[in-house]
Image 1 (cartoon, rainbow, N blue to C red):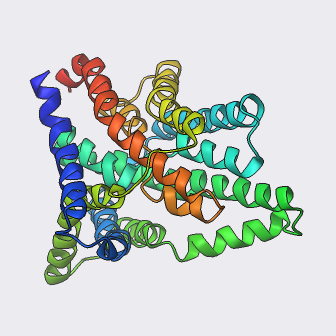
Image 2: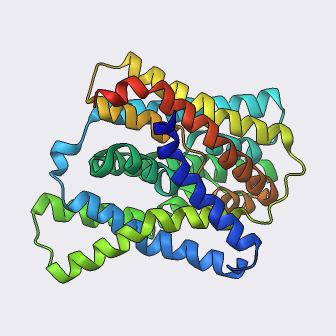
Amino acid sequence: MLQILSITAPIFLLIGLGFAVTKGGLLSRDFVPPLGRFILYLAIPALIFRALSTRDLFASIEPLFFAAYGGGACLSFLFGFLVSRFLLRNPLPLSGLVSLGVSLPNTVFIGYPLLTQVFGDATAAAFAMAITLENLVLIPLAFFLLEVGVGSSVGAARSAGAAARSIARRLATNPMILAILVGATVAVLHLPIPAFLAKSINMLAMAGPATALIYIGASLAGTSLRGDLGEVGLVTVGKLVVHPVLTALMVFLLPPFEPSLQTAAVLLSSAPMLSIFPIIAAGYGYGPFGARTLMVCTAAAFVTISAVLWLSAGRLAGL
């Protein structure tokens, strides 16, 4: 148990530190959005670029990881949508947000630090594949359904084609997508990186995980827990319990592949939803719901991630 706490405690202590320094006024809440932009536009793209450009890209690709990780996410998305739409009778946009919340983990800000704690430098392949799958398949699919859902719910003349063009513009300017493309190009073509540039990228990448955890805590300061308890509970249970269980089921049903990648797929699925969930929710008129859900889910993740690590203890000991 102490070994598990040694993995989870540093992550959640940094989240708690970010919450405390913001709540106490040491870090201004006005500084939180710029801090998030620094992470999203500089630190994390540098981390992704470093992870991809320094590896044998073709040797790192494992189709079964994509199948297990992507299959678990898609099943979780379907679960969230069906329960929200047909059991709780929520409108289509809110059901889309619930689906997004239960199926897309915080791979960058919590998943990567978690994998680093467990596997050390051997996390690059799983992280790069997860980020690629999320940004090129899962996130566009989620936004597509959200955009179409909003258009149909308000009677707007927003076609599926218009939604697709909007998503394409987002993808073309997404810094993580650009980092994936550039890093993959460097790896495939074996392009040399000047030493001074490599050091600068490495320094930015090293700043990413810890700063991201501080940002999560800071962004949660001042969030109210009132309202939307049914939907908040659904997303929390769906994300922290249903999603990792479904991914583990996919791993079990698929042919065997690298054990560390099997474990990484389940660990990444156990992370709470992506930290920009409140921002996405606000864009569809559900900002307070998004903030409340992120706070509850992130706090509860300390217990559930520890449970996943405990259940995986035998497999981790053999890696």
